[in-house]
Amino acid sequence: MEKFKVGDIVRITGSVMTGNIGTVVHLDQKHERYLVRVTDLTQNYFPESDLEPYAS
Image (cartoon, rainbow, N blue to C red):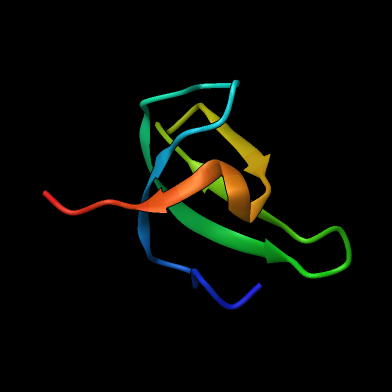
């Protein structure tokens, strides 16, 4: 779990929320998931395999 850190902007590539851009806001080391906030009201946990770095 060292690919992303809090504050990184990522694109979601998994089956849930595909194509959305969000910010990593928390690292769940125990479950190996990243909490990604997409909007003020929408966030979800994703495994590293469902995320890629976002470059505008």
